[in-house]
Amino acid sequence: MTVEPLQFRQALSKFASGVTVVSTLSPQGEPIGVTVSAFSSLSLEPPLILICLDHATSQLRAYTDGSHFCVNILAAGQQDVSNAFAFPGPRPPFDVVSHESGSFGLPLIKGTLASLVCEREAVYPGGDHEIVVGAVMEAMWDDSLDPLIYAGGGYRSLSGPEKVS
Ligand SMILES: Cc1cc2nc3c(=O)[nH]c(=O)nc-3n(C[C@H](O)[C@H](O)[C@H](O)COP(=O)(O)O)c2cc1C
Image (cartoon, rainbow, N blue to C red; front, side):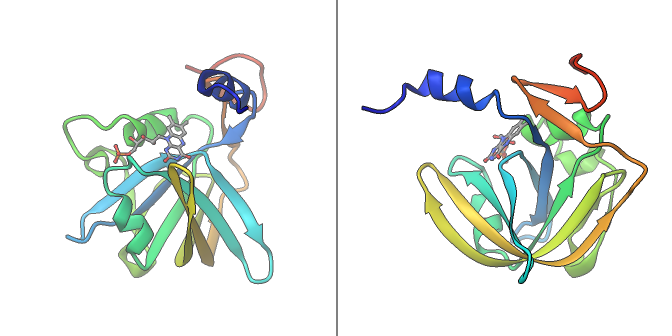
């Protein structure tokens, strides 16, 4: 006996997380990204993190086969950035989201709470997702910002109980 999918989703929505956009370059060299809350620290020495990507992610192979990616940890107020990469419109998200080119040519989103530049270390199967492990090569952050929070199916601010949209 296993839990019903709807019950499982509802239970998982009780877990509060931060929000990241994982960015990389497509095989054609275009900047691409996907909104990911399934992010975790994995190891301190060596410094490793992991992300979980749905098999339905349109450019999955760019993340599972590419050499490097960046985890952009979003700051409070960046829900528009999260939505741009979760619900892409007619234009590529990086056409409208402010960014700069970092190490390995990776697109780094501006105004984030932190950025982790990673080299792909390993990929493991995880049900209908792929677990991508990254070795962290560079870490940058801004102490003046708060995190964007996702819980109960909506964005929240750290300082208050109210939904922020
Ligand atoms: C707050 C939030 C968190 C998300 N977390 C994940 C995640 O951890 N892994 C994942 O594969 N998709 C996650 N998604 C969904 C993807 O961002 C979405 O399916 C995206 O459009 C996939 O990229 P694609 O349009 O290139 O296929 C999340 C969406 C939102 C709004």
